[in-house]
Amino acid sequence: MTSPFFGRSIQVVRDLSVDEQAYLYDRTRALKEALQSRDRESIARFVINADGVGAYLFFMEDSTRTKESFRNAVKFHGLKLNDFGTSGSSFNKSESITDTFRMLVSYSDHSLFVVRTKLEGACRWLEESIGAYAERLGLQRPSFINAGDGRHEHPTQEFLDEFTFLEQAGWDRSSIHVALVGDLYHGRTAHSKVDGLSIFNEVRVDLVAPDELEMPPHYVSAMEAKGYDVRRYQSIAEYLAGRDVAPTWYFTRLQIERMGDRLLDRAAALRDAVTFRRDFLSALPDGARFYHPLPRHRVTPTIPTFLDDLPVNGWAEQSINGYYTRIIEIAMLAGHLGADFVGTPRVVPDYPDDFVREVSAQSSRKPDYKIGIKPVDRGIVIDHIGRGGEPADIWNQIDKIRRILGLNLVSSHGVYSSRSGHYKGIVSLPTVDSLTDSEMKTLGAAAPGCTLNRVEDGRVVRKYRMEMPPRIYNLPGIACSNEECISHPSHHEPVDPEFLRSGADRYLCKYCERPHEFGELW
Image: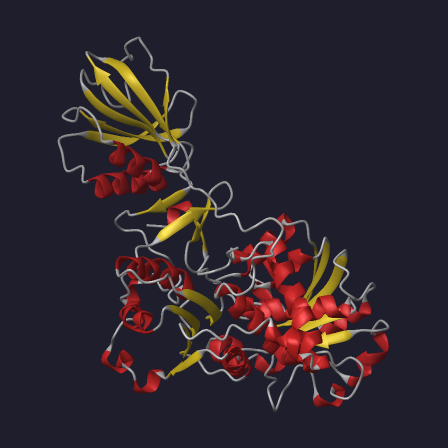
């Protein structure tokens, strides 16, 4: 039997399905019990101990717990360990991440990279590009584990968090009520909760953060779309003054280094809003537990040290669980575990390019209008551009169409009022007989909702309607607006921007998952 996890990567939490996450937690529970009971025979079943597997710790940001737990997890398996230090590497000579990993991938039969970087979406790009590069060289596709990328996600922290929540719940997955407290805007561990909490059937989330540090709206929307019951509070004091306080609290530190000057001036007030005080203890429900990804700020911790020896301390056990969960993650991606997995595997979404739809063409001639473009006898007419929008926006879309398709031709174009009273744009191309399939898909990506009419002898003989495409890629001029995304031009990595549709008119960057309205892509 072969493992369904061999050679896979973990960039975000949902790279493992809910059933696959449950498998990870079940195997971690068995490993922890074996280690605590010192059952050598049971422990040995988890050890990879394969000469051909090499693990790289590739940390471009400071880390203690994540890096050391992974280091010891690799040693547990007896694997070849490579600790990549960026300070003495060719990064100082402006080498790209892509070129660096092309070099490193050939040093083991199967390479596993644990990557922490400020470049959001880095592991997704490396999974694609280095995977394809390895296959061309006849090597096995390497695995990548995201150990934290900017303020995007930290999936392995989320897996240890959920394992800890399940321990607290006695392995009951029926429901959870959790308060997320602190810097929810910059805190990638809080962002990973959107998908990680799906291990529970019913989820209630209380977001406790002042406006400046609130959870980004697209993460809140994603929680609500999953059916989570979400409440919002400005401070711990406001939260405890209400009713139905969660028994599980998850704190995040204030990431001062990521804040602008305006927020730095308010740092003291922001800390006060999300720092637990001694007089709050009496308002906690029985059995309450506090968690924190650590480290705490030694001067101004949101969980003060007077709580360390009280029953609310759940973060000590939580931190230890990182070692156990990461042993299992490595074993799964190396193919050592997983042959006995039963359940629904991860489903990779399909994005078909069928958003150009042919519709019935009118058989009659179009009348001449007093305001508008005179009908052509032959050629292409692009109609209904930006229908219903404001004239300035429609003019911008016309310009975008002409620029992307290179329509520097004899033509007519303009913004007009349709018979229904809405504004729309029209581009008439009398010297163009047709567009290629690729050009039509490009048009559909640039101007969804428009129609393309092929005219012969003054009649529309073929008509196509352009719908919102499921993904947008390989087009000139598109770019992710997130300057920390690995696809952003400022990083000079050979990444082609790509956007995946999410909702009626919103797209997510394939790499950093930053949401964009359609018009923001160009």
